[in-house]
Length: 256
Image (cartoon, rainbow, N blue to C red):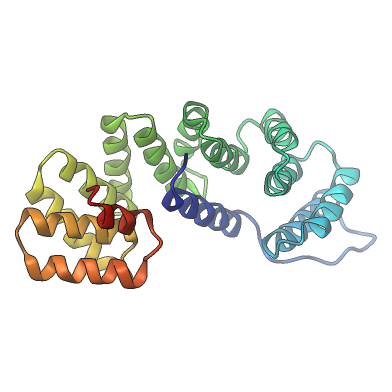
């Protein structure tokens, strides 16, 4: 089953993607409003309702958008998100596939479909979608897609691919927190503790607040380096900030 950590990351990723891909302007419907503009306004309004978890209102606006243009990929992408949140996986997948079939270059649908597949633990299928999105240099959510690609590679046990993806992210943005932390974890797993410490120290310096995953790595590195003061600090932070996290539970059970 997917850990709580990854579920939280996916939720955060999805919300970030929506913020990146959907404007907040609702628009005003007039007699001169073009069909494309009317569809865009309906989708934007639907996504605002979606973010407020008002799914009925979101669906009403998307139904109205479909009446204007039932071949708009943005409408089917948004419908897939709504049906997915409602737990109707069959309709969610239908609309994701419909959006992609209408426009194979529509990256938001592929990326959201990949997140959906990841949540279903269909990692190989998610990888296929992410490979396409991650190579779309014009897509605003490309870095998020690359991050998801790296995570998916890890789920599939392909550490070499994951490492290559996270290094690619650092080449684009040397301050990317996800890439720094995941490369630090990979270095730790390979017993390259000096490299792991250097990557982790940069992550720790840049992060406004460390994640449970970050603190857990800091704890493990402090044990390798026999830094008892640092170890005590990481344990305290994990217990105080993330007492319900998988990482803290692993510490308590000694599974690390």
